[in-house]
Image (tube, rainbow, N blue to C red):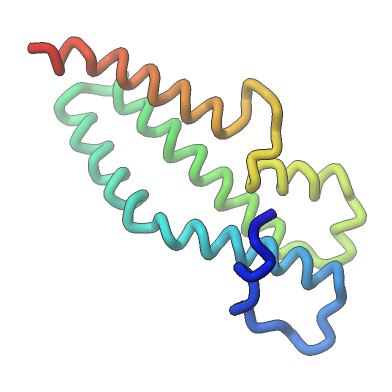
Length: 132
């Protein structure tokens, strides 16, 4: 779940238990990685509105799918980081959040698959406009 050094700059709480440390380290790494893409995502959101104005709602819906995936990962990271240690006993729930964040899912509904499908659909919709 990332390089152990990625969480080295996280300020640890006094008396942090191992389960807390592990969860907070994971959250820190995911937030840190997401922060690195903040400008890109912000630009994408603005570009999405331009796409809607020029090409309409069908293509815009593909942009929204990518944004929705980003938001799902962000929410999962926040939920995992904010859950008290008692909540980690629900192993299934914790695993579902970690799968969402780290893309451990092997399903057709995974974030990676959904983003790839949205991009393929957007390319298909744009292709006729790019040829002219």
